[in-house]
Image 1 (cartoon, rainbow, N blue to C red):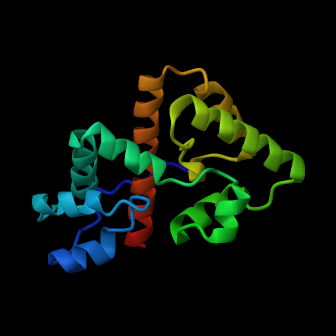
Image 2: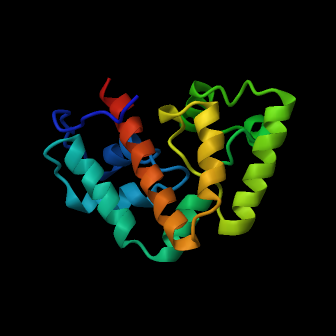
Length: 172
């Protein structure tokens, strides 16, 4: 699956409350991105809106960016699944089968999640809807070798892809 082309998806003109109700959930537990993007309204289409979201994220203070990354759940985390993922995260992890792992796979994910968080200070983020279990494992192992600055940028780019897919879901 590739991210959807959003260039022909209209974005309704909404007041700020309506805008937040429609788009505030796109960034995991981080409605501040949508709040800040609203100042760029009106948007010609969903691609322009996504561009505004990414501009806000790029211009945000590093502490805000880090807080957004830390708001993401760890992949295949049984505690997060039990306590309740956001609806979007639950669907996304299920799409890659991360809710149906063997005990060995859970243990492997747990070890990689811990190693990743210890190295970078935030959870591993990948657009799981563009991957399967094997490619997620492979990406986790490969990205553990990144320099922190490189991985920070990679995680933000993955957030952008996640949001693009979530926006595509809204257009359906």
